[in-house]
Image 1 (tube, protein in one colour):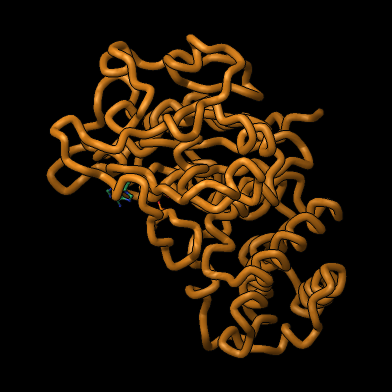
Image 2: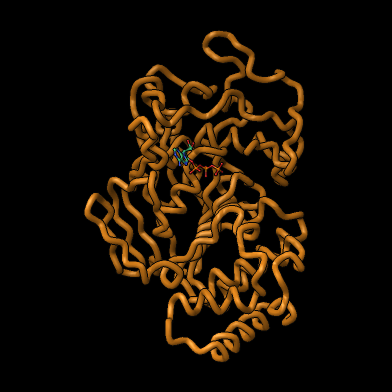
Length: 364
Ligand SMILES: Nc1ncnc2c1ncn2[C@@H]1O[C@H](COP(=O)(O)OP(=O)(O)OP(=O)(O)O)[C@@H](O)[C@H]1O
């Protein structure tokens, strides 16, 4: 299998106005192989979008990447104080489909003009007729109706608008597409249509790999080959999508699964529980394992020691419990605590938790 992206030891922080650092990505390494969809899951605020911004080279103040390296098909980018990001990489080597993209495109431009702008930004000498021929072919190859080219964004349905925005962000045939919450505002059939289109794009080699960022595990189960679970700025577990859902090895992954409706027999009959407590403030995360205040399996060393990484780069869990229980999956019911240390109730114990508006049970 050919390695498409190899990102190593990324560390990045937002500098607040009073000079403090929010460490949103803390020693994160990920890779994507050619033809692969890597899902990145986690609760709101765990650093998913920040990781997407770094991997797509869209880092803007107050975010600073302190260290790490990025290899895309053998081309290396070193991060750090003096790093200069090659501008030509954006859009052509790696492209970002940002959160909420479909609502931030210009409402006064037709789709064909938006497309031409993208091509023109990359190639000043591009001729309009040639560029539009290419766009027309692309739209036809992906089975979208030709009329979308003449439409203004507001004339398209939400699902069609998101597919069009996805086409626009891949017009330059990036090697890697990073899609940040691309399905979260869509109804179920539009989600399916977008996922089918992304798979078709991989098949047609419009891009060679996708990183799909979302809090929505059932969607990730459908679209991803592998899933990386993030918690408080770190990756806590990586596994094949099916393996992660069937046999989570990190208590946080198990907690995430028990807080959503995953269509697996093991979870279908469970009550949706929610994850008691809240993720830590990244200005001052807890010592040891960052999940320990919410973890039902926490041991004394979890309060003080950074968890060891147990497994291989394709399947690992960063957890004291899983290091002591090699090969075992976490009993979902035991993954979280129902009470904080002070005895404050976190959950209506045993009561089903009302679902969030998107039906996943995970807040945003
Ligand atoms: N401009 C900023 N200044 C300071 N802190 C920030 C800024 N943007 C994000 N953060 C913080 O960085 C952390 C990671 O945020 P990020 O948006 O990457 O998380 P996320 O998992 O993508 O969440 P969501 O799904 O809500 O976008 C959070 O604690 C967030 O509050």
